[in-house]
Amino acid sequence: MSARKQQLLKRHRQHKRIALLVALVVLLLIGALSSWWLLPLLVVLGWIAHEAWFADHLFYRPQDDYRYAFSEDAKRYPVRVEDGRLVLSDGFEPADTLILEVNLKASWLGRWRDPQVWIGEDRQDFERGVAGRRYLNLSGQQELLAQGRLNIRGRFCRLSSDATLYAMRNPDYAERRILIIAPHADDAELAAFGLYSRASEVAIVTLTQGEIEAKNYQRLGLDQAAAARLKGRLRSWDSLAIPLWGGVPQSQCVQLGYYCLQLPAMAEEPAHAFGSRESGEQDTRSVRQHNPLALPADVDGLPSWDNLQADLRALLTHFRPEVVVTPHPELDPHADHVAATRALCQAMEEGDWLPETLLLYANHLHDNDRWPMGPADGGVALPPAIEPLPIDHLWSPTLDADARLNKAMALAMQHDLQGPLPFKRRLRRLIQAALAGRRWPASGDDEFFRKAVRRHELFWVRKL
Image (cartoon, rainbow, N blue to C red; front, side, top):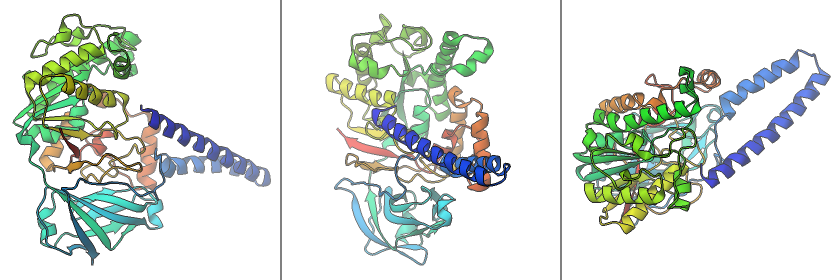
C-alpha cells in the first residue's frame, strides 16, 4: 500500500471512530431517556445502515470534481444532452476512444442508491450523492453517436445539458508485439485479458510468486511457511497456465519468482537479497523450472533488485516488444505495482531494447476501492482523479459478451480469487442488495469478478 493510501485510510478510520463515538453518546442519551429495549434495537439498525450505505472506502467527497487533462491530439467537441440523446454541435471525426465530460447531480434517491448513467444499453455507476464533473466512457458507440441516435439518461441523478466529448484515435495495439508486466499472477488477466486474447504476438512476465496471505491453505494441516510455499507454487502455475485460455502458450509466459511485497525493499538496496516474508524461501529458482528461456538470475537465484534488472533487460531483448503493458505508477497505489513499473523503466533505460509505447493500467486505486463502480458487464468510466494526473492519451478497447465470459472464466481459474467470502462480507452484500440495490455476478464471489469483467478495458498511453 502506498504512503498516500495509508494516509487516506488512516484519516478515514479517524473520521469513522469520531462518528462512532458521537453515535454512541447519542444512543446512550436515548437509552437513558426511553425504554431499555430501544437501545439494542437502535444499535442493530445503526449497524445495518452502516453496512448498507457507509461501508465503502471512499477517501474523497462525492461533490469533488474529477480533474483530467487530455493530450493535445485529443479532439474536443461541444455536446448537448437534449431529449435523452447526445447531440453534437459540429461534425464528428470517428475515433476509437470517446470520453464524455459531464456534470452529474444525484437526486435524493441517489444518496441511497448508486447513481447510474445509461448510454444506450451500457450502464456506468457513480458515487452516492455525486455532485460534480465526471467522465463517461462512450468507446464502442461511435456509430450511434455520429448518427445522432445515442440515447443517454440518468437514473438517481441528473446530467448537465452541456457536455464535452474528447475523441482519441489509436492504432489497434493488439496487432503489435506486446509484453505484459504482471506484478502478480492475475494482474495480466484483470487488466488486459481482452487485449492479450486478441493479440497475435504477446508475452506475459509475472514478477512475483504471490505467496503471502496463505491462511486458507493452513486448513490443509500446513504451518504458515508450508502454506505460503504451496500458495506460491499454485499462483506461479496460474501465471504460466491460465494465459493459454486466452491463446497465449506457455512458451510466451515467464515467472520470475521474486517475493510478494518485497519489490520496494529490493529497489532501495539493489544488491541485497530479500526472501519471502512468510514461506522462508530465499531462492527464486523454486518456481522457474518451467520458464521457456534461461535468465541471468537463474545462476544464483538471489531475490535482489540487481537480478530483477538483469532478468528484465534480458526479457526485453528476447521478446523485443513494441508495446509494454504495465501498472500506472501514479494511479495504482499497490507497492509491488509501483515498483514493477519502476523496475521496467530502469531496465529500459539501461538495456538494449526500447519499446515504442507504454500502456498503463490500474487494478487498484488510492481513494475508491469500488472502481469501476456498478455491476459486472457495465462500462468503465474514468476513475477518480481528485489530484491531477500526468497528461496522457487514452485507449479503451471494448469486449463483447463472449470475451467477457472468457475473461470471467480466466479469473475463476486463479487460485487467489477462489477463496470463500467471509461471513461478514457475505452478510454485507445481502444487506446492500436488499437496501441499496447492488448486484454481484454469478461467475465468482471475489470483488474482481464485478470490477474487471466489463465492456471496456482502459489504458493510459505513453509514447517513449
